[in-house]
Each structure stands twice: as structure tokens, then as C-alpha cells.
Image (cartoon, rainbow, N blue to C red):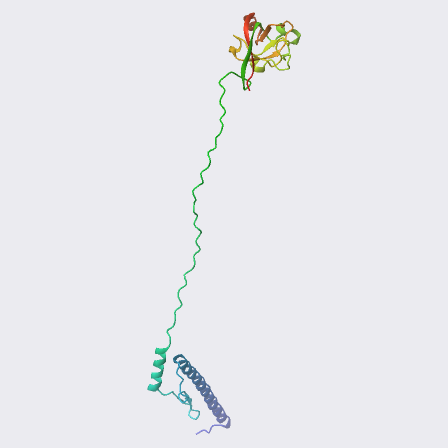
Length: 240
């Protein structure tokens, strides 16, 4: 039989002491946990637990004594506290506030006053240069014809009238007259010329004196066909 050495005995005692210390720490942790739970239960029910009720730790044996069962008085007090406790108030659900756009109310439109618009009447009489004209007098005139070429105008055949206007003015429908009888711009109507529509006096002539007129045609041949005619010529003026 072998006898344990001195070192082995020391190691055995040290291990046993460490085991006891570990067991002691474990018991302390269990004690604290159970005591905390018991305290919380008492706080929830409103009943103060007696000081004798609680876990007891036995240091000598390393065992833990569990708390005794609750007495009928303690149970009755807990039941009364639970019945008399005010019911928990559940907060009412708050509905989200939805912002509504303001309603647009259409008001009836105010009656508008009637506006009378004066519509100019379309003139029904003769017109010249976009303006109404009216007859002033009638003059008996000897009417001949000429062309803008050299056979009628000689050295003045430059297609420019004595008034400075082109011979193409008014679509070559114009008249040469004596300045003592009619000034430039005088409006005349000559039977058989320009279908009786008004024509302006825009030219002069060396042989056009007194009661004589010369109407313009585009060619010398057409002018010769006109010949010379005594006609009643109407003088017009603007009516506006």
C-alpha cells in the first residue's frame, strides 16, 4: 500500500477548498436571483412579504432552504388587491388628421352690361382710293387719247407723268388736263373710259388746253381707236 506524498495531500485540500468556494458562489447567485424574483412578485401584488419568508442559505451544509408556501391570509390580501386595483386604461387610438383642401365655391358671374359696338356701315356709293366720293358738277369736255410712247409724248416719253407719278398708277387709267381747269388729283368719270369708274388727273399736255382732256392708253394703236369725243364729264370730291 502506497502512502500519498505530502505534495499530493496539499493538492487534494486545495482542490476541495476551491470546490467549496465555487459552490458557495453559486449558492449566493441563486439566493440573489430567487430573492429578487420574490421581491418583484410582492411589488406587483402590493402585498409586503413577511421578513421570515425568503430563501435561507445554510453555510454549514451548503444547502438552500426554499421559502415556505404563502399563507391563506397572504393569498386573500393579494386577491383583494388585484380586485380593487383600477383597471388599466388602454389609450384610445388616435386617428391621423387628414387635411382637406378648402372647397371651391363657384359664384354666379355678375351680369355684364351690354356693350353696343358701332359697326360702320359699308358705303354703297362710288369709291376711289378706299374713300367714298360724291359728284360735284358736270362739265362738257372734248376727250382725246394718248399713249406713253414717243409718238404721243415725244421727248417726255419717260413713263413719268407731270405730277411725278408713274404712268402705271391706277393700272394706267389716268387723265391729262389743263391745270387751269383741274388740279392734280381731281377725280373724274368719263363715259366709255375705265368702264365709267373714277380716274385721277395726273398729267399735262402741250395741246391740252381749256375744255379738253387726254385719256391714257397703253399703246398708240388703242389710243387712235378712241379718236376725239365730246362728252359730259363728272367731277367728284371725297364725301368723308
